[in-house]
Length: 69
Image 1 (tube, rainbow, N blue to C red):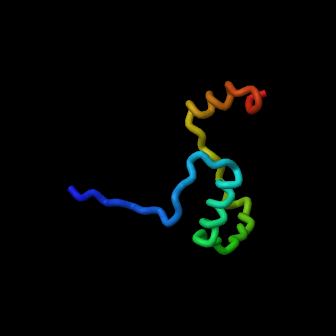
Image 2: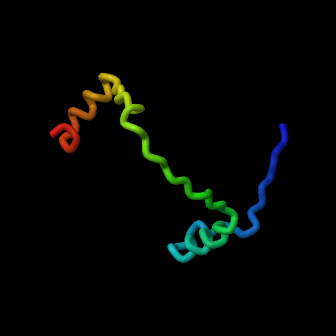
Image 3: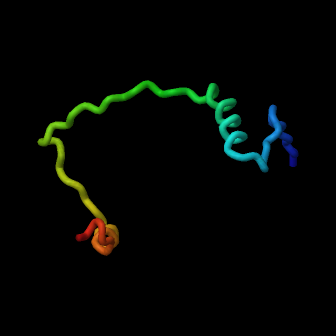
């Protein structure tokens, strides 16, 4: 079995506060790619055939007061 060692370029500050977290995020931000914005096209009502909900899920939602009332 091989023991793989990983070294971080900057030591993690486990006791840091919000400023430390923001600094970590700022260092990582250039590595994140932003996907191209995708706009949804409208769907014709004739293509919508309804939604099937399993009975257990329907009972769960019916028991939730903000959904069932």
